[in-house]
Length: 204
Image 1 (tube, helix red, strand yellow):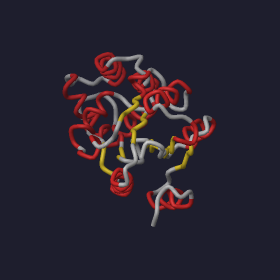
Image 2: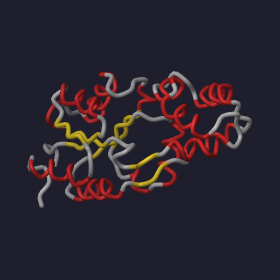
Image 3: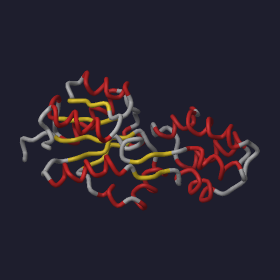
Image 4: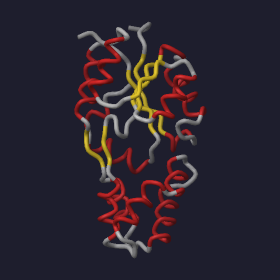
């Protein structure tokens, strides 16, 4: 199916769910901060942005966070606590399996970090079933920055309507649509499937 479109999946909140409160509870037990304070900090800190855009290494991220919150555990302990926040989202995983069985190429396109990817790769077998991966920390840019979209186009060798893109973030979808990608806002597996069926990309 060399002339068929390729499918690009966001990872978080599409294929895997995540909850920073899980990490916050574990990290709080070894730090000077309360879990509720850590939940907000871990999910929105400029340190996370720097880490996921490749400006901080894992060790630098750990050291900066540990200093900010008074964490007294090791890098290995922090890494385990920070990464173990994911669970599979079966509906989108089933859709991906269906697309693969139909012969489509598929890719993962994610704002993420090396700790998260190591954890997902180790614990969720579905993750191995893609043709390629673009991660923000490797590219040095975060969605919706144009550099990361260009990296996906280079990886796939495709542009415009040859790329079918599923993401749960409006701003990320808008950036893909601006490049001519067939961008679909993922709100649920059911609505995404309906959109793909309406466009003729998936049959009943």
